[in-house]
Image 1 (spheres, rainbow, N blue to C red):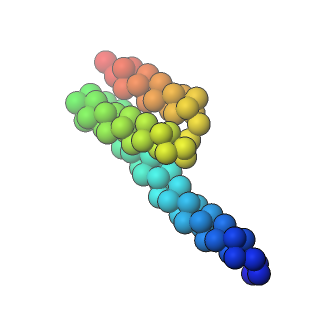
Image 2: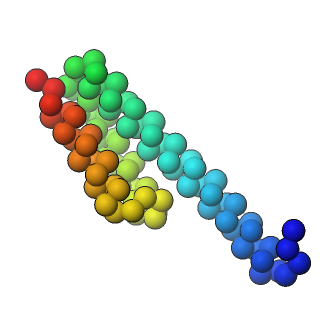
Length: 87
């Protein structure tokens, strides 16, 4: 453990941010899985509503700095393409 007060604080802050980032990433993964299962089931309506929720979650993660903006854009594009592929 560090002896300097600022180092101790940095350790605590890093742990807090790591936990928050893990929670946000987990939420994003869950929302993506919901969209993918709806697409596999060929349920257009469920896929559309899940996509809306997923985009919101992903965009929030990007604005918090958990994901890079290009990563956010790629995830949204892939999900949108998958949903649009349902006949």
